[in-house]
Length: 185
Image 1 (cartoon, rainbow, N blue to C red):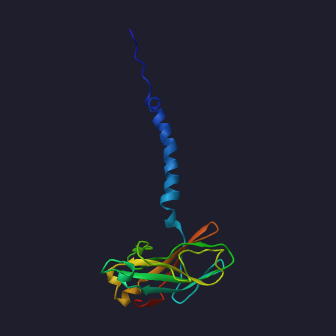
Image 2: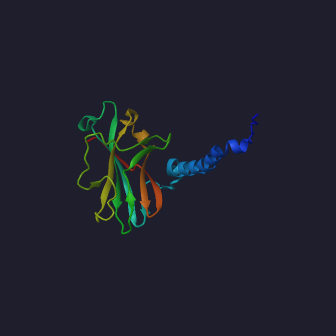
Image 3: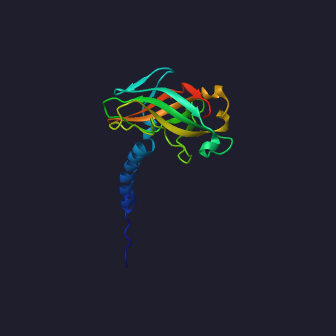
């Protein structure tokens, strides 16, 4: 006659409980650092006609230049525009990325439309080359705005340009209002 030995619930599920103890904190760390880190980037908003200074670098004079959709291969009914921010390099190392356009009313965001046939001009950069350029330049990107922004100058007042910066270990999201809108080329 054999006797069945009964083991307790804790013993039967020891492996699963051990995995749970390890995976729950690991999941928290992964989601905290990967998924939601951009949400914790400090935002530095600048008023119209003001200059933002970050580690000696100055960011000012935000312009939105409308571009003829046919000249860059944009779909009809769209409103392509080149957004540019005047940059005066400083001596400290600052890394920055292409500007994006945000709608201040509803939070929509438009990033660089790299598929369009646009190349930066002579004094334009698509990122901040911290040690390569000692003179002023325009940080520029082409964005494809929806048709609602094609002709409505009042609606363009709702747009804000965002530049993501990295200075040392500190990320920063610089928000600058559009100062000038230039008509089609």
